[in-house]
Image (tube, rainbow, N blue to C red; front, top):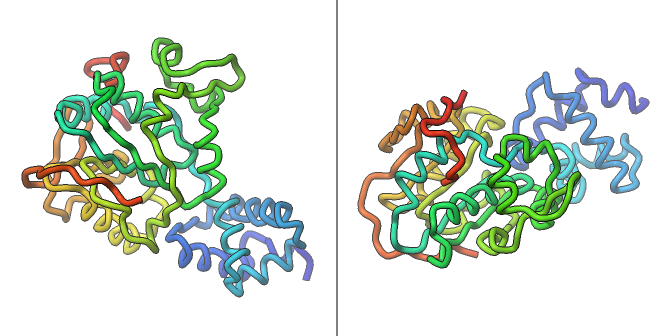
Length: 289
């Protein structure tokens, strides 16, 4: 058939591969992102030293190794440090004041910027030594490898203040490394939001700009799972564009300087272990778009 025809953006094979990806991890790449999917297939074929047409057939047959390679090379999470700063201001007011240790789940953590930002915010709030722990999960093993390396370039650091950069990173450009004090608060683990139950019960669940890649029904199921993982009295943080998805749920909306986070009604009991503020943020910060 020829690889060009097989991987044509409107080919039946590409449509079938989208369905395989949807069933495997819930991610739905729209027609406008089929070019990303095609590039992911070619990258996966190169990594496996496989003919692209042969890999396509293996993916369509849903062979586990082929599907795993597709996920690794197609599900790309783009993030950066201290994204949506208004929500960090809300966490400073609503979450960091708790005297007991905090158990935090950062779901869909990509290459780790989100999880390390939370750790930095905890330390900036003076919570060092309180036993706070962050479990950061993602479906991509390659993203988790990059997260564990904790080395980042200018794109990831583009909105980080010079003061935070000097406090929590070491080394010289082009790559800076997160300091051990921050890294010690975070543990990384592979987790499939669609196929696996929540890895524990948490005081804070952060899952930002992940649900937008799911079909509406899938996003609703995943959101229910995230809410179940929040302890009574705890908080859930979604990306600003994802907040309307939570309108149907019995959650309290907490607004700070135009940014919103969600609180689960009830009183916190004794904390349980999970399975397995930025002083430089302007006050009030710019409204997150």
